[in-house]
Image 1 (cartoon, rainbow, N blue to C red):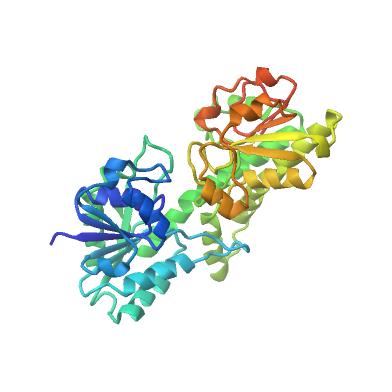
Image 2 (cartoon, rainbow, N blue to C red):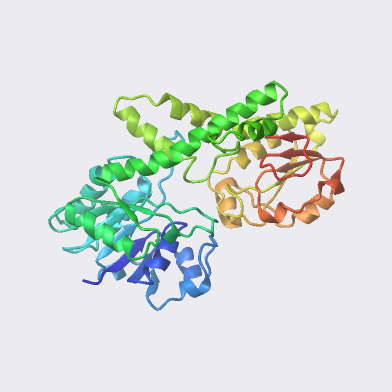
Amino acid sequence: MKETVCIVGLGYVGLPLAVIMAETYQTVGYDCNFARIDELLNGYDATGETSKAQLTSDHLQFITDIDCAKECTVYIITVPTPVKENQRPDLSPLRVACQAVGQVISKGDLVIIESTVYPGVTEEICMPLIASISGLEINKDFHCGYSPERVNPADHSRSIRDIKKITAGSSPEAAERTDTIYREVITAGTHRAPSIQVAEAAKVIENTQRDVNIALMNELTMICHSLQIDATEVFSAAASKWNFLNFVPGLVGGHCIGVDPYYLCHKAQISGYQPNLVLAARQVNDGMGRYVAENTLRLIGQRGLRPKCTEVLILGFTFKEDCPDPRNSRVNDIRQILIESGCDVRVCDPIADKNKTLAEYGFAPDDDWQVALAKKPAVIIFAVAHRCFADIDVATVRDALVIDVKGIAPRADWRL
């Protein structure tokens, strides 16, 4: 049987997946965001992850009405799984997606979850919800698979097909069918996990491991600063040993590394285990924006300036270099603290999605960082390592206080 695939959710994960699925299968991309579908129908992808040519494939169509996907045999859910203000998992987008799929699946269909979740969500929440909406019985009338997304936004050297896919299923038949679908499109191959919960856990610990390692480097950096030792030089010396892990300090935002550990911690806590190390790492990383801001204010004071009279230019706002996604930007922590201290703060980021930034943070960054530099601000903060900032000559603003968060400024008064 030749599968027909529906991708539910067309963001950084779903759209690239829809594009490669359409090379092998007849594919439908569904999203409830009408504006998103309009731009895709016009060949434009605001995330920058796909091209106009890929969006106009004869085997790919975009819809906002889930009923138009009733003829599909496979439904792959790729919606975001954020956290609430209390850092608890917010499964509402996933629940809505499952309800939509439950309205259209038929006997014999397969539902695959790609959204990052804590162990147990697929079988304890998603599958029963789909079954109750559809009236179908799981593992009898329909089956379920899990294959966690592993996309790396803005990394065009590692496309979705170049990253090995973990797969699992609710039954041996579902596991084989899920694995077969991905083997057809993923060049790097697949790794079949023995259960859905193993696959779910594997994804959240991937990003948790990175989070903990970055937190360690952040704390070591703060220790070096307190000892008045150059942290960069310390890490360079330590890296001369073959088994030193070259993680670097930095701001940890976005929708993966800064979120997934909270999913793991939530499940651990309701299971009776307190994940002290993971939560400590989250506390360290969530506090790095404040650490940068406080050191900036300290240096402003050392120069005999008053924050209320100080113009600050922040270069970059998104959570990652050369990626337009502003979600969970820790740069905003720096911005907010400086504004609250009275600084005149200007943010320039020509890469950032202006609409999303405005919706989430209440402002839109400027594009023209050259003009902003020409005004000779008192403080320049290199916050994100966009390629467009690589050739900035800080000698032209030699009197400015230069704060380098990402190790890209040739001259800096303070580096993270």
